[in-house]
Image (cartoon, rainbow, N blue to C red; front, top):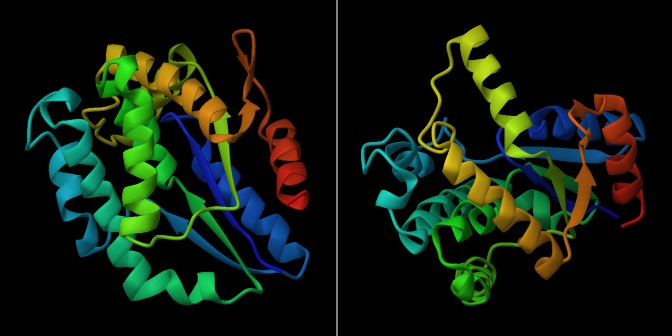
Length: 220
């Protein structure tokens, strides 16, 4: 029987790599798999997301409040769900693997709010995405934990190597620090499966990290 698994983490934590490894593993086991990656930059559904991340609504993440920004990302998921991957969720034999999901709103937008508003925001977010919009809730959110000092160094290196422009999230070190705190809080509050991707100042190998991810997926 298929499952819906979301893999999330700060920028540079290896979400794309680990999503690909999980897809390859499941297919090697004869499973039907659909892989998703949010935001869906190639689709019209991500228009507002791109405006926000490109800085056209403000140079800093805080220029767009948590609730408004959450709606941008949620609308991308909703439109793509209705027009594309709903059929995969409804096929009970298919594993759906998402690189980022509603969990990314919990991390990135929660961080814009004072801590005494965090519980209220999380309650609003889960009601909005999964009840009001009717998006499917994952069987597991696997959170790849990597501190900002390590994730940002990887993002900057990637930008230098590939010429890929850093978005307003990646440029703001203080914001990423807040996101890390919000992520750890969300892991505890929402019972995410947390995978520690580092040991001291060293990043664990991709293979080592994947073994934990594979065990989580097999245990669902």
